[in-house]
Image 1 (cartoon, helix red, strand yellow):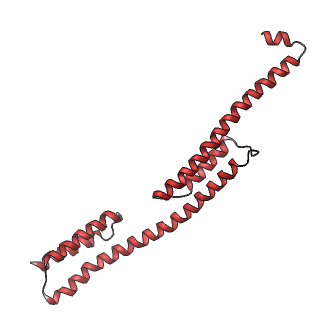
Image 2: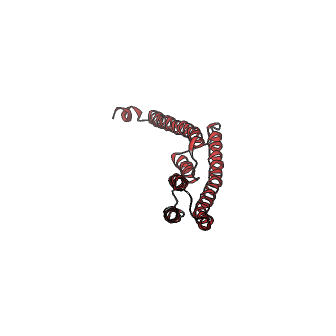
Image 3: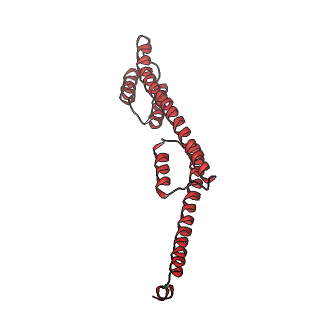
Length: 173
């Protein structure tokens, strides 16, 4: 009987209306709506009542879904702004060779990037590519400076030894 089938569909959607897997549940709701259409008519006095019951679960679910995506979009917008600010900070650091950085400074920036929030899709890929390029350049600069600092220290040490009165003895040992 068509009424019993539609009541069963109502019970299914009522169980699903609080689901948080929005994409999967939307597909399932669509399939149930297609089933509803195939079932056929119910007695006139029950038609509007059963339809409102069925639609109420849809309305509730889609209202929750839309609210969740709106909140996510707002949060993501804030994360995009934070990540863009970090990129500007990194870009300024690359343009300022006098600024002395160390690995801890870059690690702090990396932590700030990771804590700045979720960004999805192509926007994340674009931001992350810029971020990685700048960070790689700064890390490489630190490595190069570190090697140059070591060389300079060795040269300074050799110069100070060679300037001492017993330089020949120290350099031979």
